[in-house]
Length: 374
Ligand SMILES: *[C@@H]1O[C@H](CO)[C@@H](O)[C@H](O)[C@H]1NC(C)=O
Ligand SMILES: *[C@@H]1O[C@H](CO)[C@@H](O)[C@H](O)[C@H]1NC(C)=O
Ligand SMILES: *[C@@H]1O[C@H](CO)[C@@H](O)[C@H](O)[C@H]1NC(C)=O
Image (tube, rainbow, N blue to C red; front, side, top):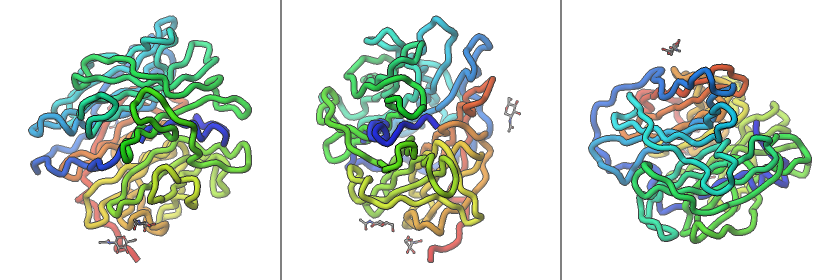
């Protein structure tokens, strides 16, 4: 729901890099225990409501093959006047137990790192950083919400320490109100030697190019936003976004497919409507898993319900199937593909929540049977 006007959706940040396997196919197959209702972090009652929101996870793919090292972070509403930071929690047992290993703190603005963190592992050397470097992008915002600044930090020691890299984009007051000019929600992806942020690009992580429209509508308050992108096995890219002005429902989850992830604005948008008629709404998140056959499985979730919407037909509009999960519904709930066809679903609570905490669950995508494609 933190969307910007069409002029700004352009800036709704998404760094992109490819030649990148979307999944660590080299990892050994082994028995995996499914997770249900694992608590990553329970904030103290002194935290400002909603206490936590907007979880993001990362599987360290260049790390030790023998164990799944996961990182998690989220919007962390520390009590005023403490400056907010992005906590970095680590699990070395596939998500069952978690411990804090570091904090990404604002090293340049004096505002704190307040909203919309995103974690990304460099799949190859880039911008002077080695493969395996962890990037953290997020929104630095002062306590009075008078400005938005998406900054980039890097860790060259698997998340233990963090250094400021660059300022990516700056915008106005941090409220999702038409007429204001905030920037929101970074999503990073390396694509053909360019790092894309949805949507500005960089070849060195230091300087960032002009804004590219990903989704721009002529109606000013249509407010497309919250873009995430996944690579399909046929080489095309799929982007989901929420569409406030959608004819089907406010903030309906929409998607576009394009051979070129820098050109989504010329691809047609379509609503995600499940085979049972449900239209998920608000803060959709998409990922792709190789589970479930030649097309793999596209998985989308949104803030409107606890379920996931699965598609094994390369995004065919009639092939989104609603499947239940054991995770709570959440604002910008995160999906992460793990080895062995596991999908990790991580939540930091709903927008209107009063005592949110950060929880995670997993499901085995290979155990789910879907109807054949047309
Ligand atoms: C998850 O765990 C918490 C804390 O143990 C508990 O209060 C809650 O009811 C559980 N939720 C589900 C859906 O099992
Ligand atoms: C991949 O599949 C999608 C969905 O069928 C299609 O729109 C797209 O053109 C395909 N891409 C390529 C490169 O064939
Ligand atoms: C993959 O998706 C395409 C496009 O929907 C479909 O025609 C094809 O049957 C699917 N393949 C499999 C193995 O399901």
